[in-house]
Amino acid sequence: GLSPSVPLDEREEAAALARLIGIRHEFVETHEMENPEYVANSPMRCFHCKDELYGVLEAVAQRADGARVVDGTNADDAGDWRPGRKAAAQHGVRSPLLELGFGKEEIRLLSRELGLPTWDKPAMACLASRIPHGTPVSVEALDQVGAAEAYLRRIGVRQVRVRHHGDVARIETDAEGMGIVFGERHREAIVVRLSNLGFKHIALDLAGYRQGSMNPTV
Image (tube, rainbow, N blue to C red; front, side, top):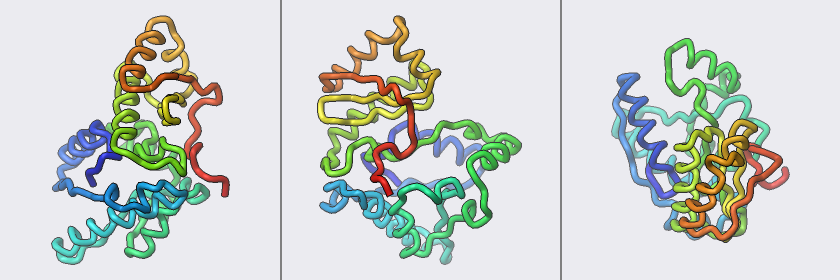
């Protein structure tokens, strides 16, 4: 599904992986940005996003002789705040990895055995997850975050989130990424690049990368 919240690199990697596996691959446009409830960015934002996506995919499945829509939810996702699961249930989406009890570690090991290049791919979520709940989602903010993270990955930072707090960019990364970000070779260049994207302050979060750190406490 293509929308402003999907980084360009993710689109290209998805297409490349499909070619490697040898399966037919199709991009479809989604229009969650036209939904005021999604743009408002409440803690239920993910529900509205997935409701749009699964609605579009249902039409694709119907053209494919009634095929089922499946997603990649796994056993390690079960304890996190994921309102998109409600949308999945409403649209009859299956989650094979979750149903089989596969966690992320098992998925990575099996992916490696199968020779998939994504076996050690860092966790990724849509760009809207970088914006605090209650702050409206805008294309401009999504573009800022996407460009900032793409730059950081180009210089070698693999696991990274650039959290968008207005004119503040808060960088979450792991220990290896912190070494790159704070090293003399890249620190000043990062400040220049992110400043050019419109951020006035660039901060490194010393707590490091935490999956779902912008989610509400549940």
